[in-house]
Image 1 (spheres, rainbow, N blue to C red):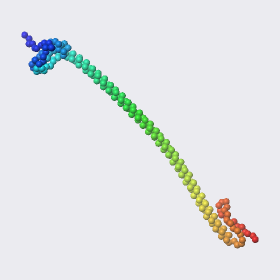
Image 2 (image 1 turned 45 degrees about the vertical axis):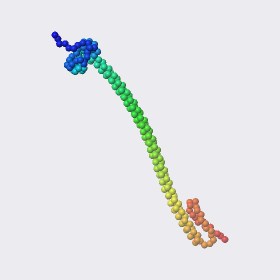
Image 3 (image 1 turned 90 degrees about the vertical axis):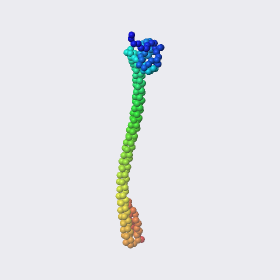
Image 4 (image 1 turned 120 degrees about the vertical axis):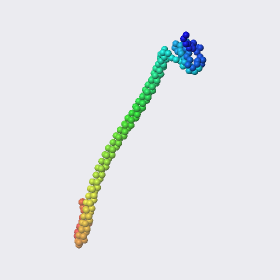
Amino acid sequence: MAIQIRRGKYVDYDPSKLVAGELAVVLEGDPNSKSGRSVYMCFKPGVVKRLVDYEDLIDLIAEATDDIRDEIQTNATSMATSAANSATASAKQYASNASSSATAAAASESAAANSATSASDSASAAKGSASAAKTSEGNAAASQKAAAVSETAAATSAQQASDYKDQAAGYSGAASYSFVVDSEGYMCLNYKEETS
C-alpha cells in the first residue's frame, strides 16, 4: 500500500491542523492556483508555504510579465514626458537667455557708437580750439609788434617835440609856435614869424 498524505478540497483545508514537515494536497478549489490544485508544506502549525509546479510557474510568469510590462510602459511614458517637459523648459530658458544677451549686445554696440561719436566731436572741438589758440597767439604777437612800433613812434615824437622846443627857444623875435601832429602820427613844430 502506498504512503498517502493529507488531502481534500480547499474548503476543508486548515493549516493550523498540520504539523511541522507535513505535506497537504488540495485536490480542487484552491483560488491561488489556476487549476485549483496545489501542494502545501507545513513548517509549524499555521505556517505553511505553497509549492509551485511547472504549470503554475508558467502562469505566474505570464501574469508577472504583463504586470512588469505595464509598469515599465507607465514608468517609461512618465519619464519620457518628464524629460520632454524638462527639455522644453530648458530650451525656453536658453532662448530667453540668448534674447537677453542679444539685447544687451545691441545696447553695448549702441553705447560704443555713441562714445565714438562723442570722441570724434571732442577731437573736432579740440582741433578748433587749437586753431583758435594759434590765431590768438598770432594776433597777440602782431599786437605786441604794433605796440612796440607805437612806443617807438611816441618816443621819437617826444624827442622831436623836445628838440623843436629847444630850437624855438633859441629864436629871437616875434614869432608864434605851435605843435601839430602829421598824418603819420609824428609831432611837428609849426613856426610862424610875425611881422610888424
